[in-house]
Amino acid sequence: MFVMMTVFGGMTALVVEKKQWTLQRIATMPVSRSQLLGGKILARFILGMLQYLVVFIVGMIASIHFGDDFLALILMMISFTLAVTALSFAVGTRVRNEAQASGLSLLLAITLAPLGGAWWPMEIVPDLMRTIGHISPIAWAMDGYNALIFENGDLHAVLLPMFVLLAIALLCFAIGIWRFRYD
Image 1 (cartoon, rainbow, N blue to C red):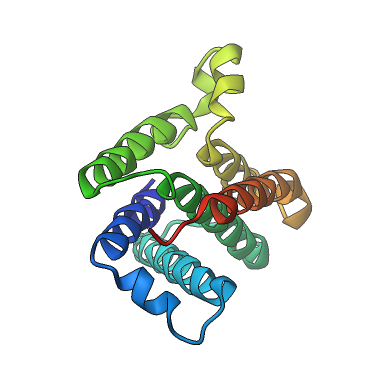
Image 2: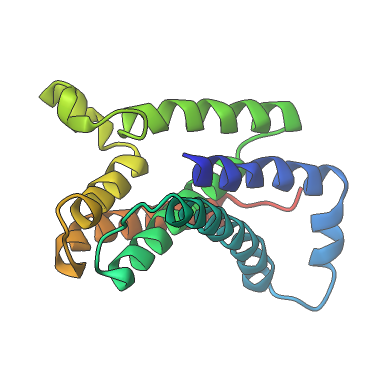
């Protein structure tokens, strides 16, 4: 949830940059549209990964065991951060002002987190809610983390959640790039 809140801040940053004409000035420089968008996306992705780093360092200090497959854990982190970054970018192309972006960021975070099982285990909710909950990228990330941490799974155990998160990322990036405007 904290990674999502950090990354969703990109919506507000995008609106502020448009309002202050920063994006428009960058667009006049000798950089391609894909380089500009790639830089904006990469910045949010890195912030999300840094948030993960903080969370997992605190967990390690608290002696929490994160499973035995470090590579699978890192790939899950990358997949989730990409999905959330893409979702933020896709939604951020439609917001018009800072208040709208800030409110939408908070709304999405506090809606998708419990819906996806970040506040309580999905096993305690009815089957219908479990199915609906998988609309949230958090549900897929939680499926992967549960397999790694509680079931001592390996990379094969998290392939489905990773692929779903990557599919969400591809779809949302495509939507965001298609809808992105400098003005």
